[in-house]
Length: 230
Image (cartoon, rainbow, N blue to C red; front, side, top):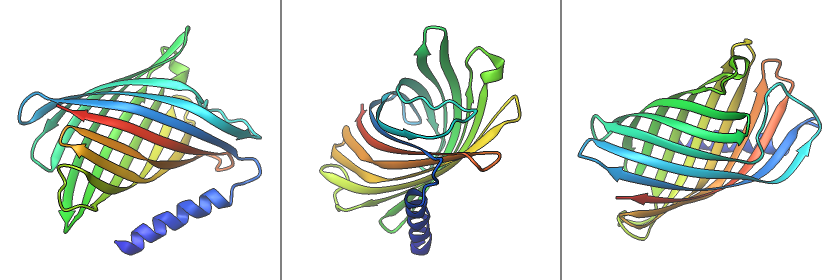
């Protein structure tokens, strides 16, 4: 496992350092808030708002796919926990883009978690369908997220910081048979203030390339999220 973590960090570091001359490089601030309400033992509802703000951009080429530098996401989901370790989620995201075109995408995911000592491992398979109202712009996305968390404190209920590492490859395709692949790598800290409030913050690096493997879009996200649980 340590070898896997080292290799993941190394590959992403190399990707960031050796950027091609025709790359697109964005730096973004991505604050958000997430509110969860437990409806019963197995069912809970989550609402999340995120706002992407561009800090800087370096761009020398164009792509068939559009990269929004500023947008707001409104996301609601219902989560069903089959067991303590297995859950299913169905949700809907609304992203107002401009007056003539808004982005709506339903999502479905299944997650599984397990522990080894103090380490917690989470696996999530998720499918998204981006609907714009124009068929030629519709987009499908399939993604797998692997998350590792390590608590620094024995008391995980209050004043508890956790180290978080996330690796998430994604595959996109549309009706024109065009596709691209995106890789996301996140490292940061989750800090539990008390059982109901949590702060999630860190840096996420995203890289994309299309079916010809000639266009790269590299983005750096500064992420901050306040999480509230009822």
